[in-house]
Length: 314
Figure 1: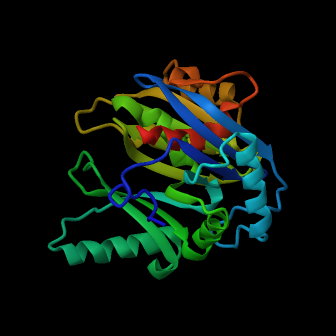
Figure 2 (figure 1 turned 60 degrees about the vertical axis):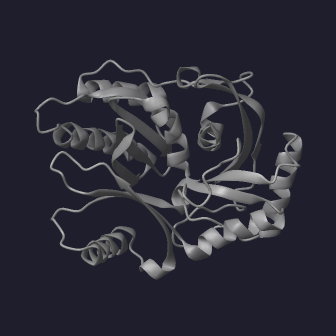
């Protein structure tokens, strides 16, 4: 299976994707309507036993691989996608981690850069490089001209668990990303300009990602009690407000806001954003992002991550 975020090894992705999270599994197939607008061609979501997938960066995620494979087989059958063999996969939020790493000093050689990146990666993820499956993409330099990298990591044994489930079904995943980067595809499509904020929440915290002109500015994953989420989100916004202004002294400000998941309502998240930044944003809905849902039967929150990955097929 290709490394995470690998576009050089396998540059073509299917319009079908799987989403896994604790207590829920989804499959989707998208169809392009016109321009950047797409619709669900087929989809299904199952509430599954929470013991089937126990998302964790450090501990095993899947105790009974055969049982999870059977659930995914039934899910694909219910969506009419049983013959589909090529998929993208959205990993549970807690199973993978994402960092934006900045190289503060000018380095003299490629080997020196590799040494610094290795040190930052092992320190940031709390694990030796040898234990991790890592994807690394170079980002645009920051306002000070410093090199930046988007780094995604999952422990090799944990990735192997998900691979084993897919292999049992004779399925192939050409792209595997953590949930928040699947969801983020809706904000970064079609050359979106300015700053965009994704808040991907759960009852155990959230991941906040801010993009500037489609490029990640910073990523923060916060683990906290549900009653602490608002305060932690406020701190994230203060960090953004205080540190995101370019050298020109003019901040582009937030132009788009996407709120997915549990832990905080879309309305309350929008209120906190506007109170903190002085803006007038409302959280974007599926139709704002170019996705036509067939009915209220499908919750955008439950399929946003796999559907976001499916948009990479065109």
